[in-house]
Length: 122
Image (cartoon, rainbow, N blue to C red; front, side, top):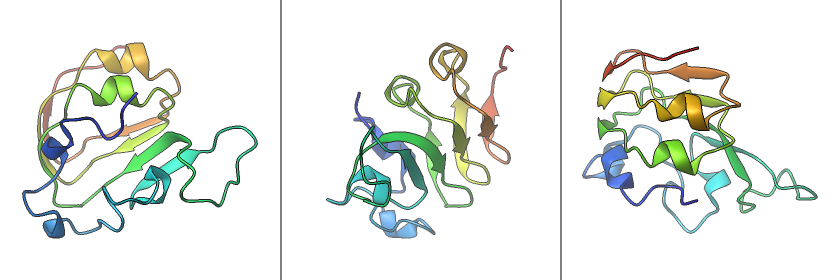
């Protein structure tokens, strides 16, 4: 599983500095040290080690001046996702049916104030 997806450019401005919160994003730091990303560490790992690329459990990029489409790869690359908050950005597109199939642990999904269409089944 690859995170960020190969098509992560869909999740960013052409100028990443236009993001409001982008500390360490796409840097050599581990994913778990990126702004807005939280991970559930792998078993027997140091919980406080931001270079420990555990399983991504939270993606919280609210009000971050992001625009574009949400790539379908995101649904397959984050199997342990519990929280996805992309609210108050400029995303567009349709919610994939893959959410229900792949995100069994999902507790919170927030696409408020975007141009996202589609419906979710319970």
